[in-house]
Amino acid sequence: MPMPDLLPAPASVPSWAHFEHRADMGVAGYGTSPAQAFEQAALALTAVICDPATVRPAQAIPIQCEEADLELLFVDWLNALVYEMSVRHMLFSRFHVEIEGAVLRAEVWGEPIAPERHQPAVEIKGATYTALAVRQENDGHWVARCVVDV
Image (tube, rainbow, N blue to C red):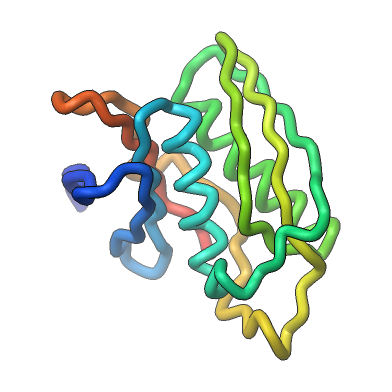
């Protein structure tokens, strides 16, 4: 199956989107910088599970990743979020990412999963290299996207 082209960024940046991919789900983030695109992709990741508006940013969790390649850093970032969601039994709705060279430092805010309120649809197993792209578009905005295994 050929790799789908990147969707054009929505009129408002920053933003996020989902894209179809067989049985899995694609997540994409758009922003004025790689860090902002990563933040928006994290919001898209939460939106695969539940409505992010139902998740209160009550508790802050620090995350750090390191990869020399920006695309690999993006996958590590999403997988770090999946890990934190799994071991802490939390969902996240607010993200602050800083990228300096090969190092990503982030703080994410969320709360423990409340099934009756969040109504989680699926569990994300991890981010993949399928349809992976982190790049700056001609209009200057950044896009970060990949498929996540659900």
